[in-house]
Amino acid sequence: MVAKRGAGLAVEGRMLRHLADHSSLPVPELFHADDRLLVMSHVAADGGGLTTAAQEHAAELVAALHGIGAERYGFPYDTVIGPLPQPNPESDNWIAFFRDHRLLGMARRALDEKRIDNTLMAAIERLAGLLPDLIGEPALPSLIHGDLWGGNILVRDGRVAAFIDPAIHHADPEIELAFSTLFGTFGQPFFHRYGEIRPIRPGFFEVRRDLYNLYPLLVHVRLFGGGYRSQVARIVGRFT
Image: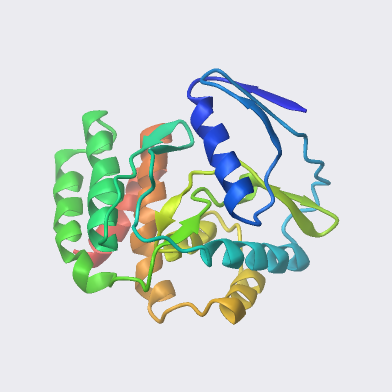
């Protein structure tokens, strides 16, 4: 067993239980969750990394997760991304949800915490007004893990043994794909296999990937500051 102590762990437990009950995504078995303590099964990993075989297996698992649809974007309850609150008011409109509750919401909190300045905030607001012409509405909402990077993927014998630390909600699945490229988590083997199962709309790699990565980058700006702020400014400058 693994015991995790901290604040707000009841939400993490609730997310793990949702994935276990409503998807085939492998996650640790949950034994107990409250606001200060999370107890779950230990998942053995061999440190083999995301080899070609592991990436292809991950693609199959993630594509199956993204195949779980919903009527609206958001989620029935607010979740967390890392230690930060993640509001999920449900919406019929993806662009409005992403604009208000991901891009602008996280940017305004970064501004309040003095992690970004008014000049960058104004540029982000200008970009927000351009989103309808840049993103487009996806076909339907998908369930996503929400924090898909190498540190949250446990691999054993060349296959994914479990995904941990979710930040679930219903979204355009491309926001998940975008984040998986931000720190080099997945490469061509993942995207080739994923695309065989769920074709990726044209324009993702050229346009939407950068736009969607503004959200996790702003999360990192709030947590760490530094060079993440310049990455945000570069992407915003590209489109404004």
